[in-house]
Amino acid sequence: MPPTSETLTAERILEATEEVLRRHGPAKATVVDVARALGVSHGSVYRHFRTKAALREAVTKRWLDRTSLRLAGIVDAEDRDPRQRLRDWLAALFAAKRHKAGDDPELFATYTVLTDELGGVVFEHIADLTGQLTRIITAGAGSGDFSVPDPAAAARAVFQATGRFHDPCYAREWTAPGIDEEFTAVVDLLVRGLSSPSR
Image 1: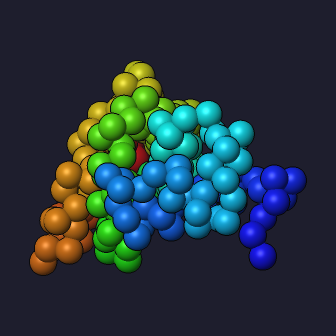
Image 2: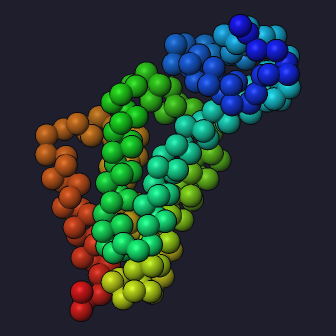
């Protein structure tokens, strides 16, 4: 049974939009297609999202936020060793990106196009991720595990240094032989570089 204007929610629209994007790609997915998939008028969709760009921005943010939410639990585990939390966080980020690229390649390709179009959403996502890293590194500096004068600068450096394992432009390499060993080597180097000499 199609939703009515009273039962149609932004979340339901975003779910339908993701399915339309999966089927048609970003070039052919329109608000009319989303409305048709929901069995409502396109005006009903526009009541929640004023423009096609706003709808695309919201669905892209939702997709990126899934990764941030998955990683937040590691950041919040403040009773654990910061060095291990850093390792776990970087591994979870790599796993999340590989999962998206490998399990649903059509949708991953679609979102790669959308993120290129929607720089603001991507910058917010990167700021969120580097903010999470900053919290882990700050905790490590506070416990004496890490020796860094500026945790935020260190977090940005760690994020950039591991770009090969989370930036979508490297997605083709994520299944290459030896990639896991290369990831571990990079993370080991970064953790040693951050660690206090006494640790």
